[in-house]
Length: 111
Image (cartoon, rainbow, N blue to C red):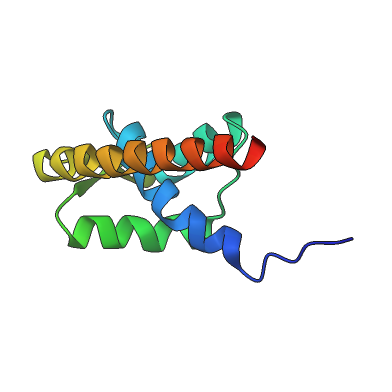
């Protein structure tokens, strides 16, 4: 029997990707570096998903960007801000609480 996810995975990935971005931007990176980094972790992310997220995070003040020219090509680098570090800490606290609840419920189901 095939299970249909009805768009569930993109919805669940939204918050997860936000946390990932705030974690990897502890050091300055440009978009393609992030995409490659996530792919190396086994978590493929498309450009049309990442770049709108980066714009939202920057609008929220959680990351900032600057341009650098490398080999005559401009690249936009991003890095987390102090406000972003506070947001990341809050998101991780929420994620840890949620994870504990899910683990508890899984153990209950498996009894």
